[in-house]
Image (cartoon, rainbow, N blue to C red; front, side):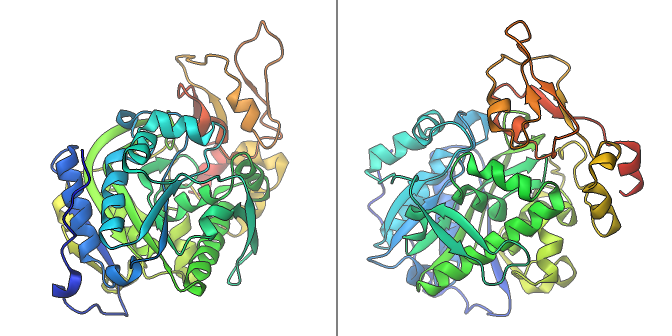
Length: 413
């Protein structure tokens, strides 16, 4: 599909934004056709205040897509290539220069770009896909616990970060949208190492929020900004964010400059509970963003409404929404109690494992072994396992799942 020669409609006709509120543009897609997707993305961009100033001529805009693993568009694991195409068109229509990239967990970026269809879009439109290997230190002045990250320099060198998450359920964090997608700023296998420092969902929530605060401050200091465009056209439900989940048509496009507000609205569009998304309650306390559930008047939704998605409820991940806090967090960190409190990875009943060993390769705790060539399936050692579920995320066959929540964990739900 050729790039449209027409500029996007001006946002000057929109009402003046209330700066005390976060605006989330919500648009419906009737289907997965390029025409429907492009119209929804165009409308979402136009509805955001100051979008033309943010994406003004001369600015370099990094489109941070979601490239978890080698997956096709139909599997709804990576950002939809037509959403990426539409975003490129909108950026260029305002005179800015787009570049595209991400850091997959194990697979090479080139292979995931190819499998997802995003690589073909980049080649067709002549969009740069820079080297993501070189890193730079991102300082997080507002950090609660994690105050520095080594991230891809190509992203930090941009003027604007356009975050393009996929709306998905997630076995560790409950859902993956704007805030979780920023974890992809960290190159490849290094992400697994961060799971050792944040070995359960609540510590991971602190880490993700610290990273978000640092990213937002970095681009504000550069005089640019941070913009989020969430692909909820074909969402992922169940034990996402990889092949353990199932694609489901949702028909939603969301956009905002406030990741917390977008993530809260995204939960509600999906029919799921925002308080179960581990990053949100912790962000509300700090505060980071204006997505507090108790202060719904601080978020302005334009375009479609939550009611337009009434009756939709994505299937949540196994054990979705279970969080540790206070004394429960302390107990969950005690290795001798962990097996009684927290689920652990195991093979699915259909034994779909193909023996690729990617699970063992990514495991940051060395808790997975293949004892011999005669044993082509993984053996999980619960004792060192930190319950990051990276193994399930990278499994190309969705052959790893969560066990049921143990009895002691059920007491704290």
